[in-house]
Length: 291
Ligand code: PAF
Image (cartoon, rainbow, N blue to C red; front, side):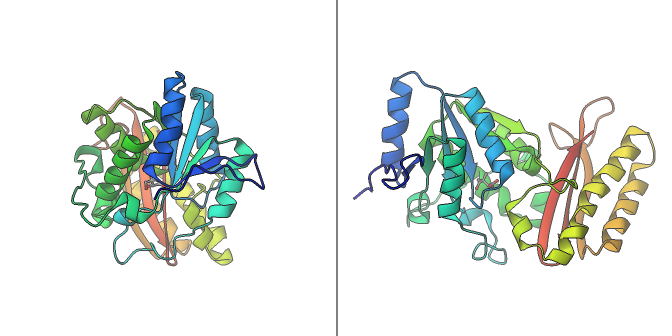
């Protein structure tokens, strides 16, 4: 039996929560019948100010906003951090209450992936290379779950952070290719005072690593300066990699300059994006900047 859509009786200012597709649909179809524009922010929880900026943006371009919290097993490899990924449902709902989110959707793995589930959404183009070279399962997992979430929530607009830039391009590509009636919007990365990109995985950083983490952003800026000044970009990438190692990063997965839209090779005179992923201790950080 499905749990009802719940309005918290103790904190009535809290957003409604729905845990089943049927309950989610009950709310969203009512909004749609009233002609309201629905905004959507998909998350895996452990919300930080970057997520809340996405919610605020969704509010500015729609009438009602749904935030989903679902730690998606399909995008994690067996060796990755699915079990230790931070889960903070109560704190997350409180944060969403503060920003005035209308509905929090909290599906279970059984709802998202019933025993007879056999489908994968696979994207080529922007999904090729970069993250896929190191996490081959990742974008099939992301595309499949986001496709399902779009079909469940039926949003008019969905907001993603540019922090996961390749993910944003992958989602935009399949939404376009599959004729999904949703506008996929990217929002600039929110950073700490020193420039570190906000990420739920920053919670893994030991205090001694936190001070070094900024080296990733500095490495991106070093490469960007070379691109802008017309210097030897490959040499700059080698220097930036060395700088990361000197700062204590254990391994640099990639630092790459790509075409900002296709994520293929850069084209002179067209927007470019510099993307990087590197390990600080046991924490894998990713970041990117525009040129
Ligand atoms: O960016 C994330 O938090 C996740 O990859 C997403 C988009 C919620 C899909 O699980």
